[in-house]
Image (cartoon, one colour):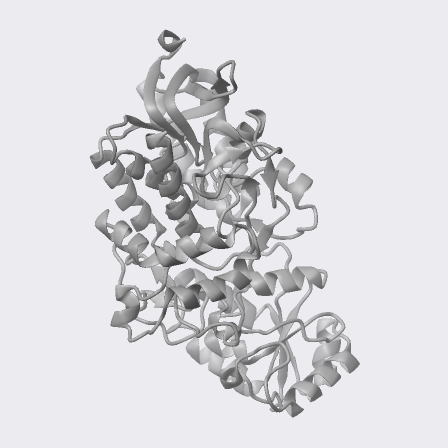
Length: 524
């Protein structure tokens, strides 16, 4: 009954990261009331990210950098990455609307800039804000390559700038935000329509408890990313405060509920169930990425897909010189095109059992050391220094360096001989300008294996989630019918980046799917 709700709104959004913020902004353009419910203080993984948005088709930033691009070329390339996770029509809508999407973000205060990074890198320095964020250079036979990684303009990892601007726009839009409130259950009427939420909220807790909850969560987020065990320990008092002070809160939703609660990389139980093949990777997650959005949708009757699709990242650059090396497995066999995006390299390494070494010779290693300061931010510099020192073994011959690293010397010798003698296109797709013979001793093998290492982690991101209707974002049941009144967006749902991941595609999908669901829920 309506009078049983403590709070009511037309559109209620669960989660206040990029996807939730974009859903709220779109819904708020109508005359509907909008409420965002957030367990912590907001931001989620977005605020800790690099703030990269994948966009193309001729954005102003591309034009300023002298880059030629088209929506058709963007569609052709992304078709190889999306791998059928969404229908072609949805992907085409995403690509055709890419320029307008970036303009929409700029209209809400998110700054972008078109300084083009000249090197292949995992993330550009503060001098550059447009770069090849995927494997576009390796897919020239599919579409003309173009840099489409639009990094939010801000120093360091600039996701905090992107989120802060979106959060401010949400509050300016008239949408209400309730923080420190966790959703425990979705409420449905007799016909199965989702009509509200049952929550536990700290909004009536003592001021000191709310402050402690906010500060302790903030202090645990960074350790949670880089040292999950320490992060979980630091986060225990947060959960303790919730158990002691949180009180029931019932929230009514007149038009719809949008689940924007992130992925499930922080849920050890769900990772063991759906991704047991991943070993030694570091969950790229905040405490809020515990799968709660997916579980809420399933409990309401929704179905899931692609939960086994997880993205493990193994970046070889920066420094950019390292892309000229040859990545081999324990048998000494070449693994993949070394210039591909880190998620593609990570997938190839996982398929070889998680062990990999990058072979370089003296000129490459010397150039890599020279490039350290000019091509890296601090977190990249620490990783690169570790790789080029503690993570590297060297020797005067291929046989000796293979023996020192534990790689089969005969296999390595055969691989290098074939690589050095090759003419014509590289059989694995490496661009010609990045190839040169490895023939100047001493030789070095850099350990790029996927295993727990504080200074060279292999981040993992979950990609699957609730299945949604492509045109609206409504959650679907196993029989293909919709769960009335329920939507899912971002990493709580199957979306544009659920096939495979390139940098910026998740945030771009959060914007695309969040706006779509917010718009439809408001109009329902």
